[in-house]
Image (tube, rainbow, N blue to C red; front, side, top):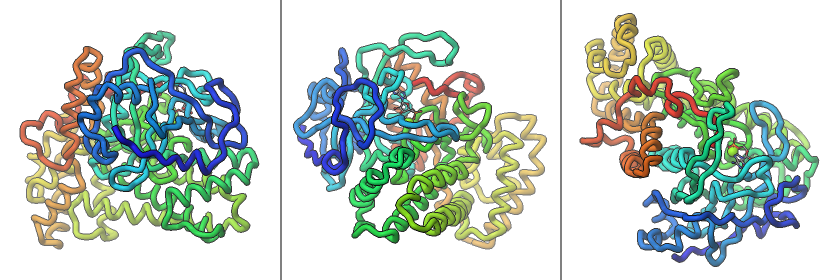
Length: 518
Ligand code: AMP
Ligand code: MG
């Protein structure tokens, strides 16, 4: 197994003089050296061909017993220099102080086969100085969810951290899944995440909160140089402003993707937003089954619904505003930061128009098309209609009132179907008129097939794979990984993976709501 490491973050940013995992406040440093804690019996449960390929790893490399040892946290390869990074964050709207990588340990930055720089990070590899009150471990169920969803998102074309592999540790981890005082042992696991950068908004907020402008300055310079090289150059407010503006537009693009595919992150705290605009930290996320802008998958969020589906673009803006506040000591004038935030709103509005056109198969989005979409959303919500099935189905048949029959399967409730059928037929007629203005039916279908996935990682599908894995059968994980490789293709024989949420899953834990306990 040959991996070439070049650990820029360690070389260029100040580290903690103390080593080892004892819990502490770390001042003036962006990282702490810490070694993964060995596990009893690391075993590869699943791995991603595409990520392995990118890193230049082959199937024999994965099968080599050394692989499970290294990626389970029991050994290091030459050039690896493990560390946990230091960040803070706003959690559910409140400043939480120092958080940091409590259960993530980076192994180093690889120069991949394609020339790109990729940081390898183990999640669940044991305690770090940032573990606070917790154990630094992760359970199998949440690790399966992170592994599968990272890869599913990448195949959907959504910016995301990737996952190289999922390992069982051969050890149990104790979790109180429902926070009801019933802690129980569960199988432990480690995921190796891969991304050019794991830097979060919270990395910038922490030094700013401590008045450490020198460290903030160093971090911004480093981030621009390593992660935004096209903006690199002598330090200037103009350069920094261009960088923050790009963070804003990347975040807008990301939000538009989430809204397009029906992904709800569930914990959009500022420590869970990537500075490079990737989806990061798959926890109690969920996928929209019946279209509901007010749905949140996270039980901890059930009251306030801060992180509900339809609110994600607004929360991202709020998070960017916190980031702007953190960066303000580097600016003599707030105007460029304000302009960049306005740029977020403009970029999101533009992306939303692109989504609207693409999801409806239109050549372009006109002002009245936004109301066409808004009216459809209201109908989908009122009639409890499956998002993925409806949009995919809408692109299959010629538009018109008659198309409703073929869309019947997307409805969860027959009574609601009948109650709203006339309204849907009227909407479909309006839609047909609009499509007639474009004219090209095959172009409409092609656009819709490219924007509306056939297969998404529905919550119940992930949960079924998890239940099988708990019974010792990884087949469900492998099947899902395979089907989600081509989410926009109809895959004959795999219709079952495109089915709407079955009734039994409506209120089942893991299928409807998820706790943060992972
Ligand atoms: P999250 O809500 O998963 O983004 O985590 C918030 C913070 O809690 C981060 O600093 C995590 O590293 C930390 N954390 C979450 N779970 C654990 C765990 N099992 N052990 C140590 N730290 C954890
Ligand atoms: Mg997190």
